[in-house]
Length: 252
Image (cartoon, helix red, strand yellow):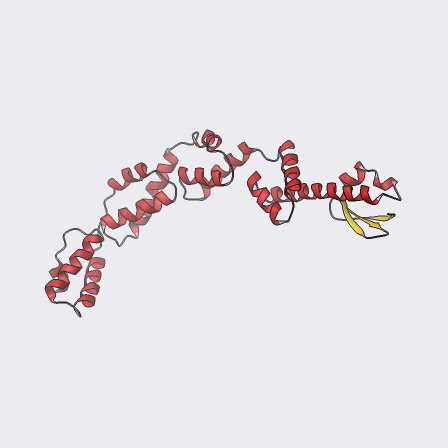
């Protein structure tokens, strides 16, 4: 196969034009095999060169992914696989990135924790779970999570409860049950949440209660007698966490 000429491409890529076809090669490959000094090259040798060039292609694509944002090894593997690189090419890229210090677990974990605590309402358990899903070991994550002041999480819980309290239209029990579930899903400690909820005074909105009772009354009175309607309303309110309520007062 005859090499006719080279043409500079993007970044460190070159287009090599032969008597058979055109190919994109990285300068690493061109320099390694001294291709600029050659006019002819054996087809078999060139096939091997193309295979090695694909390794570099996977590596440089991985670098682009890292330049966009911090990535874990697991993320990079998934994204390279989507670009249809094979196992050998992905493995080469990962090992080269690791050797050159691009896959620094300490930097990634600390940056991830910092962002989660400063940008989102999220607790320790959720941070831990997310990092495990990204491919890190729980043991190494704990090394950094254990350095965080636990009062940060408590402060977030307190602010969340007070924010929800201002817009609350539920009964005390229903409010606390709902907030507890929401905060647990966000990764906060159940014990910490309960401490705050136990000291939270929920004032039930009488107007909201009145509207609810009238709505239930109008729904049930079409099918049941008055006493049955009251019983059904009372059961519904009990399930929703309302305490003893004078139903007659609202229905009059």
